[in-house]
Image (cartoon, rainbow, N blue to C red):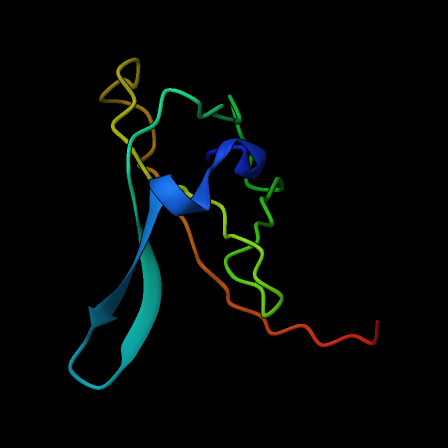
Length: 93
């Protein structure tokens, strides 16, 4: 996951659509940048979770993130599992 404060939205992100059979989702194409600072949770347990900002109506940028092949994973290690839950949050200023 990329530290959002190291992302320059004008040069690092490009708006795009993910088009599915029955819906279209707004997302961003993320370009490589040497300025990025990455975060990784080593030995994450099933009781540990990440909560990340994907979008904000006030113009805050989402957090670029991805999955990757772990070069030190063993064949005997359990496979990676993840779930994505989207939540809408409304609050008064």
